[in-house]
Image (cartoon, one colour):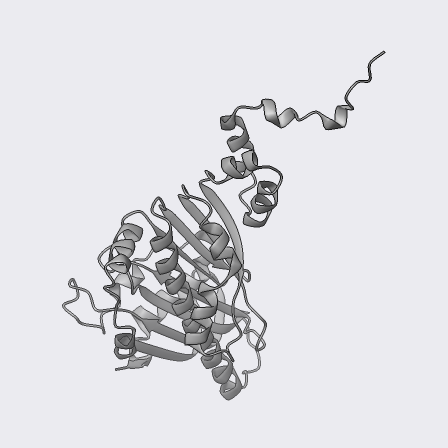
Length: 292
């Protein structure tokens, strides 16, 4: 009586068509999980390389690391090297985790908007504040609140530059890429770049038509509002700091004092309070906005 092959040794996956395997692996999306599966067999590795959507977690550098060094460190990340194994990537979702450096204000949000006319330097806004319901309360320590707000604006701008740099690298490395979404683990910010924006970015990077990043400094605007009432959401913000960094556009004729375009940005549902605060400052507190 001949011995039978144990059931555990039967390779059921071998019978599946590649289209079915690809469908199964497309449900994983996590870069780490996909790379682990690719080690199982050459066939798995071959099929997985055709995955079109990837989720990846990256760890941001501490602010004590110089900006240039942090960007070079980003290029050397193992995750970015592994992404190059996927030849047909169309969509990449990146979640950044950062070390906790200072106590967070009760409200911190920042947002980037990349326009199709300027592939590299998008408008950047950052807002931090302590938030209360609209009731009477003891005033906060304004000097301490302002110091914390300023520090978070600095950190947010640094991360803004890091995210743009990552977009350049992803656009250059993945010819089929159509969409990139970057968020931080605290959900304080997100950046979405897609379609024409990616095409223009890739074209400029390959032609080495890099922007003069130093030029951003002349477009820096800062507002400090000790107390901001938000009638729609019913909140009272104290120690509100708003940073705006944006390139002049043809529509504005180079007038960087015109921020009307920001008031028409599309904000997501979870950004309603953020949107109301930004618009309230830009419309009713223009006298608080200072800068070059």
